[in-house]
Amino acid sequence: GFFQFTLPYRWQYWIGWVIGMIMILAGIVTNPAISLVGLLFVGLCSPGSLEADLHKVRQAAPKPEDLEREALEKGFSIDSWWMGRTSYTPTTDPSDWILPAPGPATWNENQYVPHGDGTPLPEHPVNVGTPRPATISTYGIMMLLFVLGLCIGAWYAVENSTPEEDLTFLPYVALGVGALWSIIGYFRYKMQRQMADTPTSLVRSVAVGNPELVGQVRPSNSGVLRVVVDGHPNRIIPNCVNFHWSYEVKIRETTTDSEGKKQTREYWRTIREDSGGVPFILNDGTGGILVKPTTFKRTDMGQYLKRWESNHADSLKKELGMEFAARLFT
Image 1 (tube, rainbow, N blue to C red):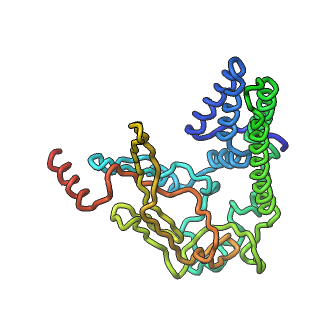
Image 2 (cartoon, helix red, strand yellow):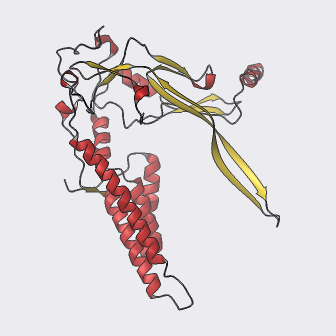
Image 3 (cartoon, rainbow, N blue to C red):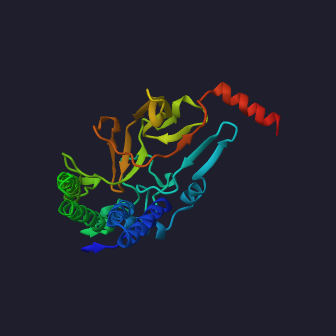
């Protein structure tokens, strides 16, 4: 359709969305500038129409027992209280399956041959169709109102300014924000149109060129990777065909200027990172095709699988000592 009203589906975005609505209402009574900030909050916290629809389908779709068991293992956990070490596995993944995926027990020994009767997988666009988002959603409405309000506010401030106040730069600021938003929107629209205009091919009839394929990742003769993140024995991700991890530390620096004023700033610094992959089979039900992930210039692997955090530097010797102390005094 033309317009779709969307609401957040994650509690983090709900908090920002509610704060934004409160600021909009408060700004109407007090200062319109507060309403502009509220419009920005609501817009950024509102999902797109297609993202909201996919989330609703995932919530209503039946899941096999193995996915239910996996869901119970997700979430936040404390790995070591003494070391202040925690881990978090996201409970939702925008790139996850919507309909049940065929399990390994049903796979053919030869992954290149069709799966089952050779029909596309249930979630293939040939069966479910190509989803088409609404022309405009809550995000678009709020961002449009924000830009219009910014332009009107700049004009009003210049018209009511005194000769001593030099506010002639405000219209240019509003014009710059609007132009930047328009440019970003143009390129995003161009990318989405290119994706929509590229038909999804079937493996059994894929043509030479740059086709779009949708299917299930299955291991090839190269096998799978058992990724040991940063060489730590307790940070292992099995059954990977493509990976990237980074080890970052949070730096806190306090500086003192010539007047004795202290200023503290925090930032993240990447210490180590690694990536890699092995060829895998993409099977869409009609057949399999070999994919070499390391040959792609750009790769978007979606949301991270797991995140580890620690209040202390990673040291196996230190960890063993702390674990020994924990066992000794408990």
